[in-house]
Length: 72
Image: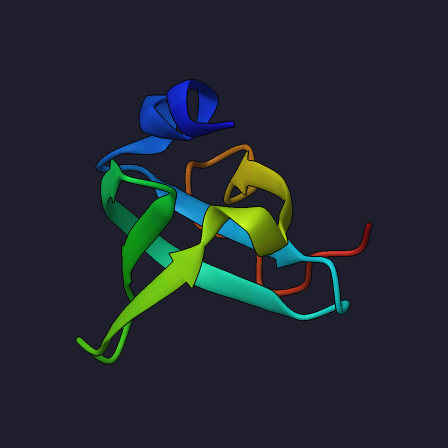
């Protein structure tokens, strides 16, 4: 998971956790089993990779803007 998560560095992403929560923001760094995410309001979160179920790039519309509603 560590090597795969590194592909999302500097991309606006959604990180899904095993408890059903989702964290969205820009992935700034991935190392030693943790992801550093910068959120829209400039706060920074560190997430343990052991709790990550899924990572994906934030979906965009045809015009390149972020979708306002994401349904999985």
